[in-house]
Every structure is written in C-alpha cells, then in structure tokens.
Length: 281
Image 1 (cartoon, rainbow, N blue to C red):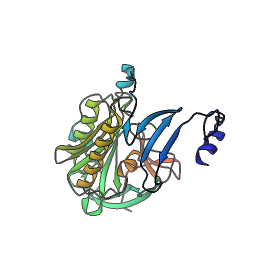
Image 2 (image 1 turned 90 degrees about the horizontal axis):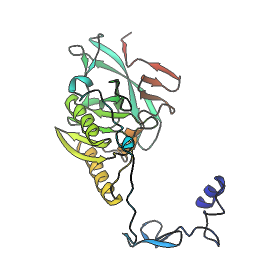
Image 3 (image 1 turned 180 degrees about the horizontal axis):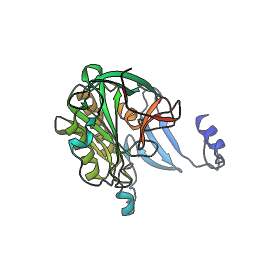
Image 4 (image 1 turned 135 degrees about the vertical axis):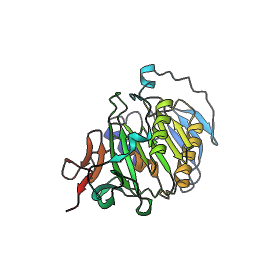
C-alpha cells in the first residue's frame, strides 16, 4: 500500500508501485520485516545486490566543478568570529532554541545568563551551547549567532553541517569558540559535509563536496563515516537518538517555534525576527 499509493499520487502507477505485468520489477526480498536485511535487490528486473554485496558496477558519476565549489567564506574563520558579545549586563534574558528529540519543532526557551567582560558564553551546567549560521553560498562574511539547548554537550567541542534545511547554509553548534572555528574551516576545506570536533581533534567527518549535500564515495564508505560522526556526538556528551538531524533542522524557518536564519533569530509562531538578548525587566 505504501508504494502503490505513492505511485498513484504522482501519476506513475503504470510503471511502478506494485508487482504486476508491465511494471518495473523493482523488488527487495527480505526474510524478516522486523530484522530487516535485504537478501536480494532487483532494479527493473536485474539483480543488483545479493546478501549485502553489489552484483553490478556503477558507472562513474561526474559533477560540474561549480557544483563542487559551494562553500564560500571571505576568509578562514577564527574563534573571535564565534564570540557572542553584548553591551548589556551583568545579567540578560536570552532567547534560546530548544531542540526536541525525534521531533522537527523546537521550543522557544528563555534563560537568564551572565555577561562576562561583555561576552555571553555557553553554559554546560544548563545544557546551553552556542549556535552559528555561517553564510556559505556567497562570501558575504555574514555570521548569525545564537544559543541552543538540548544537545547535552559536556566537553569543549563543536559540530557543524552544510546539510541545513531549507537554505543549506553552514550550521555550527558548540561550547568552545576555537572548536567552532575549527569545525567551520574543516567543512570549508572539504567542500561541505558534517564534522565533530572535540578538544582540538576531528572525531568524525563526512565529506559532502557535491553542493555540500552529497558524496561521491560508495555508500559503504559514507555509512562508516556517518557512524563516526554519530559516535563523535556521543563522545561530546550527546545522548540524543538522531542528533545530526536535529542539527540540520535548526535553520528550518517554516516550523515553530524558534529558528536561526541568515538574517537573525526567527520566532516562527509570530513570523517575525526577535533579538537573541533582551535586558532584564
């Protein structure tokens, strides 16, 4: 029902969507739907995989150079670019994006935070990290800074991704300025992807050089690298089920409640921009 309903919706049920004469024989054979392991995979009637091994050779894919040059920074970033400075103080109210595990919506949280020497830092004791959106489609040098809660980071660390729906800017979340800069520069050098930095070391990296969204490597290699990224999240203290998905949705400014965009912090419920920092009343 899942495949035929989809095929009928898109008007292609004469070609696909069910096993019947005249349709493409796109079939996956499994022994157990709960312990799902593909025994045989057929594409248009040709067996392409058997017991986890490919039976065919894939033709090499070629992508234009413009598609592989999608991370544009004015210059290499430094820790200074990720410091959240404010003229308010000594305490302020901060609008914080609260991620919700396994869900796309976020919460609009408010915390009272300390200002130290004109700067607001991450607060690991309350699970408050910093978030940055780095413009990467054009070298404008624009960086929007904010705060996010819910990842559970308890180390000097940062994570970054260029898979960031819908505009796919670069998103960096971290507890440490230098780690955030290192994460951003690492993705700039490899043309995009996902990376985890902890205490000055790369724990996991998936290079996605095609538009900052896709890899040119075999799926097996990408899967292994993605597993390293997830392990990096865990080593940084994050116990979420699917943290890289939560990371990639922080700039999705069409789903409530609070998101970060290239123009600033967005209250999606009010469809308006709001300041990150507000003075205590």
